[in-house]
Image 1 (cartoon, protein in one colour):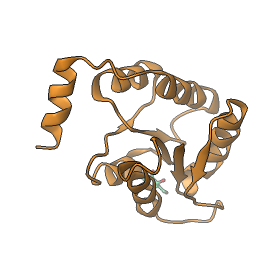
Image 2 (tube, protein in one colour; image 1 turned 60 degrees about the horizontal axis):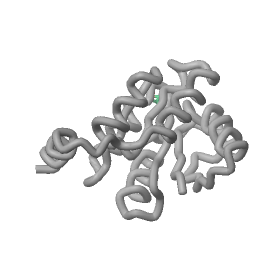
Image 3 (cartoon, helix red, strand yellow; image 1 turned 90 degrees about the vertical axis):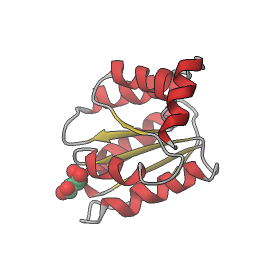
Image 4 (tube, helix red, strand yellow; image 1 turned 180 degrees about the vertical axis):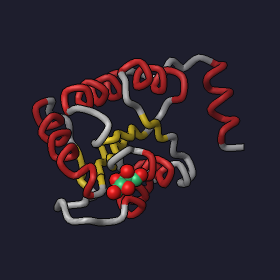
Length: 142
Ligand code: RB5
């Protein structure tokens, strides 16, 4: 189950990502926002992060205008490794090296086509499982 959330800046892209997940038969839970009306990104970043940290959802996708505010928020939740990605190389590397559990996107930064490719790359890339990466990830929480 994928947790998804955005503020108003990411609302339109969130709807496009949801449609894309449906075409891939991937289940998601939408934590809002549910309209383009102005709202506060920490509310949605935290809701998605808590769903992933608790194990209710396996992965998360969070979107705001830049992806910055919402990723900063998500990374305050213990156990969350949220990666703000604007390219497929980073999306692949953060899964392989950081075992990132949340993808953050900037809707005012990316076109929809690239954003959906980044989503696919993030969801389809497994963690490498290499000892050095496991060690470094465990050091993050120390
Ligand atoms: C909202 O205008 C904007 O500040 C927000 O979407 C995001 O970019 C914050 O980091």
